[in-house]
Structures are given as C-alpha cells and as structure tokens.
Length: 320
Image (cartoon, rainbow, N blue to C red; front, side, top):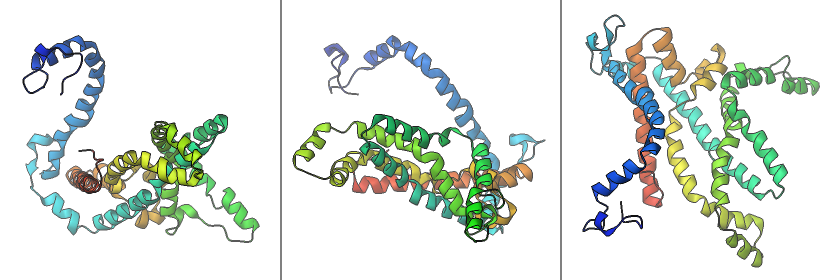
C-alpha cells in the first residue's frame, strides 16, 4: 500500500510504504465495517470453503456408513472411469456444444441491448425497456420452463397455432433433437440479457460526455460514435467479463436443462450437470459424481487462466 494523505511521516517507512502499526490502527478504527463484513465471510467459509473437504471422496470408494475418513482410497480409478464409460464423453460433447453456442450468441447480446438502450433519449421508454428485459432474470427456471413448454406446445402453443393456420404441420419443439439446443440457447439469452446489460449501461454512464459533444461538432454519425467512442470506452469491462464467462464453457446451467430435458432429447441435451445428478443422487455413486464435478471445475479454471493469459498478451485488462 502506498502513502496516503491521511497518514503522517511517522506512519510511513523508508521505502514509502505504510507501517504495520498504522495499518493495525486503521483496522481498529474501522472495526465496525469489518463486523458488517463478517456474515459474508461466514457464508463463504461455511458454504464454499468448508465443503471443499468433501472433494476427497473423488479419490475414494465412498460408503455412507463408513464416512469420508473410513472409506477406502481408490486413487485415480474414478477419473479413469470417466474416459472408459459409455456415457461421459457424449455428455461432455453436449456440454461443450451448448455452452459454446451460449457464449457465441449470449455474450454479445447484452452489449447490443445496452448500446440500443443507451441511444434512446426518452427516459420513460428507456426504463420501460429495461424493466421488461431484466424481469425474466428474477424468475426461476421452474416457472420459466413451464411458460416455455406451454408456449411451444404442439396443441396449445401460439407458435404451433399460427403454423397450423398457415397449413404447416405443428412441431413438437421440446421433443425435437433439431430444436432443443436452439431452445436452450435462446431461452438462456432471454432470461439473462436484460440483467447483464446493466453492467454495460453502468460502464456507458461513466463515459465523458465531452467526447460525444466533440463528435457532434465534427458531424460524426451515431453509428461512428458507438464504434469510436462507446465501444472503446467499455472495452475493459467487456474483456473482464469475457474472461470470467469463458469458464462457463464447461459449467452448464443445471436448473435450466434439468427442467426442460426429456427422454427424447437426452442424446443432445444431457450435460455434465444432469449426468452428475443422475450418477450421484439417483444411483448413489457419490465418488464417481464427485470425480466428474472436480474434473469439470479444474477444466473451467484452466480455461479462465488461458483466457486471462491471452487477454494479458493483447491488452492491459486482466483479472490476475
């Protein structure tokens, strides 16, 4: 930490760094702020860090009656089963394909929405659009799945009613292997696009208005102002969010897919999350399910590190 105006010369070391005594005094002075932070710290310790201990069952033949410590070690056997089993590789393929499409189409969607909302000059219309677009984010996938299934119903859904009126045959979208992945991607974008756009709108609000005024004087069009002023100004935010989102390439949305998946589309829709649930909860194969989850998280971490490394080589905006 560097020298600040609040510190005195006595609190600053020979190298311009603040002394430990001064830091301790600052912590004591702001003890109530740290007390307010304690519930958040407890939440992460109890629900995120303490359960890490259970990861070791991925290396054991876990038996409930014996407990974690009493179960026998099996080394890498559960991980070897990932590659020799008949179902894991197809599930991994489905996960990568679905999440790649979500990243390809879902990541730029909130940027485009934020750019369009930012160009709206009428405050009432802007607030109305924002409210409508981020409302689905606050609904659970259980509710949304029911709406989507009913909306796409071959007998009652409005889309199939229109198709029938146009002399087309109704389509059973939710049971079609050709449509299921598209439905997953489009509904994910519909649910999250409005909420994710808030981050970009906040970044756009911080752009210096004088740059737009200077562009108006030069007679630059609105499209060119977006290209040369708005997008470069929110570039750091885009890079940081892209790095964080890259880890989702292997982390599927279990709630969404579990509530929309059915037997007829399991060949294209069964992903690691649903596969882990089936193996771990329904078949009580806890060690194997833990190995699948650990494998997924390690791959996600590696992807984030690679994305961060690439961003570091091409720009100054990184998360590490």
